[in-house]
Amino acid sequence: MTSTIAPLLVDRRAMGLGLFAALQAPVIAHAATPSAEALMTASYKAGRFNSAKFQAQLQLTGQGAPRLRELTGASRLLENGAAMARLMKINAPSDMRGVGTLTVERPAASDDLWVYLPSLRRIRRLVSSNRRDPWLGSDFSLGDIVGHDVADWRHVTLRRETVAGAPCTVVESLPNRQGLAAETGYSRRLTWVRDSDAVAAKATFYDLSGGLLKTMDASDVRLLDAKEGKSQAMRITMRNERAKTVSVLNFRDFKINAPVAASEVAPGALTS
Image (tube, rainbow, N blue to C red; front, top):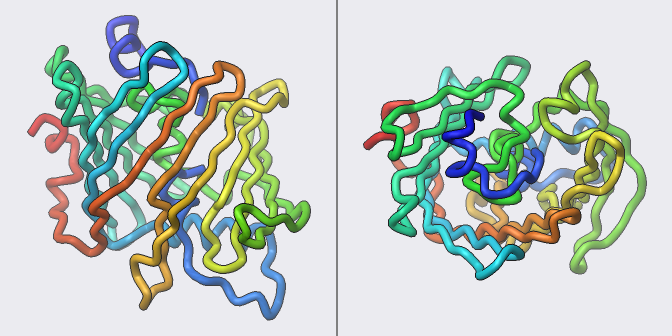
């Protein structure tokens, strides 16, 4: 990012689990143990609601007084379901009102990333290397928000563990193509996938030297679509183990299948 944009968008140099895609998934039958790739594919696909609208609060702690940011967001499947667009904007505090991001995730194709800063009065399109940049100054990266294409990673089942009383399968994911680690900031990821609904209850992220960088915990998982078996973690905590900072994303008023026009998740919507 340019030196003008970095101070506004990037409060913390936390490097960038498809936040939504990997935290939501349908119930998976365990009559036959699914492969690691099948588990990650189910998580990735299940977060792709036809459409959704929500409000959220983002709390940042660890550097001075806690900071709160009130957000609104919308998402929608595009291109006959081949792409997922997600737009999120800050409503408060007043000095950050209007700052927003738009991500368009396309499996097996290049993702699109945009950011809007009202102070500059322009929409900026980002490149793949920006995926590791912090999202809205938090410990979540833009890559965490847009999601990780399953095919880009090599997945292996490691072991079974229990997280907050929920039996899980631990899956290791390693980059499957050159340059991916540098783009995302991750050389390795571990995901604890719950048996009951394939929600990722926990994930750890490792930097380019192999050291532990961040830890994600998901809680307050709610079944939002009983017909499709899709659930959403309403509270997601990301801890930067190096900087000792914490970002907590609390969702509320999360409505799936809400009317979302394509124009509401297009770059022009960032300025409205």
